[in-house]
Image (cartoon, rainbow, N blue to C red; front, side, top):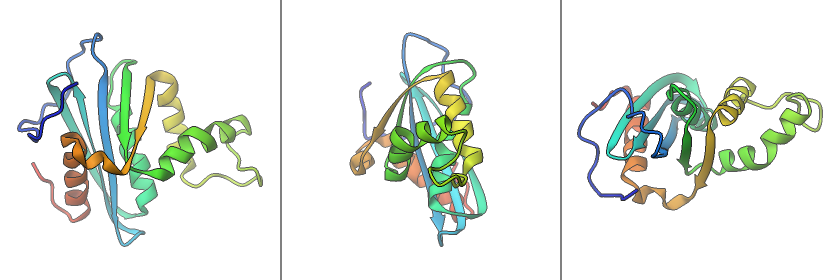
Length: 165
């Protein structure tokens, strides 16, 4: 998929169901205060088509809205897809690659027997990772991707009470 520096100019509500192309999801969450007012957003691309989804949460941590953004993006897909998810959250990287499989194998318990924080969202994400074929991409340099810049702007806008059309 070629990237450009041009931000999306339209807001469709779905991506074309062309199974020959993967879906790219750029997700971001922001919390003003941690915990505080938060926003999450994701931009989904398939070829030249895209859609945006976003929301606000009154009292939330940055970890929860980062996780919520990815879950909401995957849940927007109507049928099982090949998906590449891009996030700059190190927390998500560690959880997805190391912690989540261990929690699931222990009946969604931590090694000390307690419940993982944000268990409701981890279970939703687990279900989505078994519904879709997901490749995960992390890095602090994701701002170079227009989709990620847009997701960041939308999430910040939602946290500040703006909708950014």
